[in-house]
Image (cartoon, rainbow, N blue to C red; front, side, top):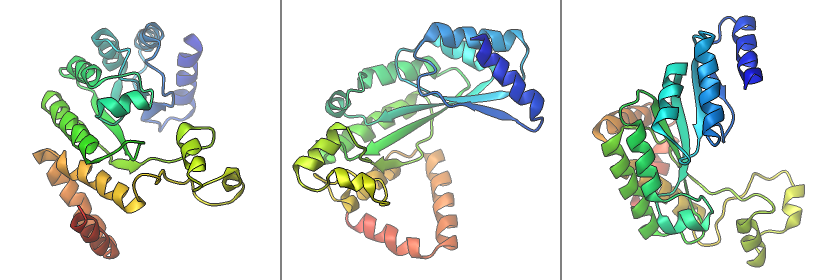
Length: 240
């Protein structure tokens, strides 16, 4: 615990222009006692800087989030992936939609920005599971407004279940990893174009009024900077 805070002090003392530190630990909140103790030590040393981190939906507690706020945490990112109960179970996420709602209730009155990361294209992904994801997002937004950077297609990595599925279907083999090709997407059940449409649908359908204004502004800016995106996005929406 102390060595983590020692490193934080070293960074802010050596690099005077640092304004925010991201704790690149996907399991920072997994050990809640450790997370709280780190926050208490940051508070005790009167370290005045912003922090962001990734976290799991559970385990979680309001006490931990309150200590994180006092210690200077301004944002938390959750790898939610999907709102489908069936898919959450199949990808061994060990959480349920109810767990997600409960954690958001804990954060409702705590002034920490929340970001969730979503994916599309897990085995069994369908329009029904996409609807479940959208419905969960809407419920969460009623509790606490948060940001969704987008829903990205599922990547395939070696020694994973989806890699084995692709091997069985004959769409990839071990030699792929000896090439300089990009990391492949899981396209056994849905084409890449379908996956992009699914992701776009989640992004568009789940935006609140505040989010829509920001989203439209960003999209218009990107279109002005790159007119070829106009044709691409029109094609995706047409295929919805």
